[in-house]
Amino acid sequence: VVVVWLLERLVGSPARYFLLLGRKHLHVCMQAWLRVCLGDSRDKEQSMFENVKVGDVVATITLTGLTRLVRIKRFTKKMVYVNSSVYTGVLDKYSREDGSRIGKTLFGGTSLTTVDDPRVVRRLANTFYNDSLVSILGSYGNGMDKDLDVEALVSRLEDIKSYLDDTSAVIRDASELVDRFI
Amino acid sequence: MFESLNTGDKIAVVESFALSKHVVIRVVTRITAAQIHVGDEKFRRINGMSVGHRGSSRKSIVDVDDRVVLDSLAREKLRRVLYEISRRDSTYIGQDGALKMLGEIRDEVDAAIELISDGERLTVVEES
Image (tube, rainbow over all chains, first blue to last red; front, side, top):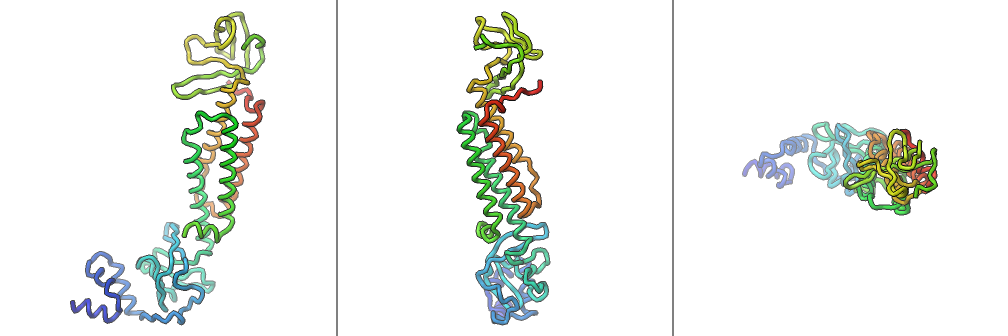
């Protein structure tokens, strides 16, 4: 109880330390330590990333390239919090001048970056392309065509064509592409 | 149906399976009073006309303009287009790569539509 009380006094986030006591999340423990060491200024004006606000959508990229879009939940001078504590980033250590990369996870595995980062757009385009093809094959390619005549088949191919056009339009427009994944 | 059939004409060989039919376009190589020869295969005339059967096999010959033949070839074409789509390597193609691939697939679909709509091109003789 004393330890919890002390931690609450230091950081003011009881739920986090109940988790810590639950022994489940080592990274939460590490974060606590980091927050104590780096300080936890809640003054958002001091943020070195003026363009990034709470509620903004950012992207996480794992070492294997897996990309997810997440919203910033909380922002401090040194750190940014997104979906869960796993994606906490240390901004001043890993930022770049162009602002494209706003953080890195505590253990260095996952980068936090802005959605207009070319890596993010590339990955989302890839995912959307694959999803669209799976959708086309799922809708038109599973043996449903055995009773169709020529006219019906032409109409089906026209449908596929317009689906491909829609997919191209989304991939061409990066902001539209991002919207699809939020 | 085969009254006016001559040597060198196109003919559709239809192979029936339990749930599907496989159609191939071939050339008639020889005609006798009782049989129609298509390559190495001989088809029997039934009552001197109508559908020819190859002995007791599940193969028969049908006129190339037959609706069954055109529909079947068109379905086969659609299957091939979808197969081509499914086997494309899409690893790390990115935005430009995806647009390029989508353009290529669209061209393939366009070509398939043209082909399916044109009965003459659809029933091109296949190598035996």
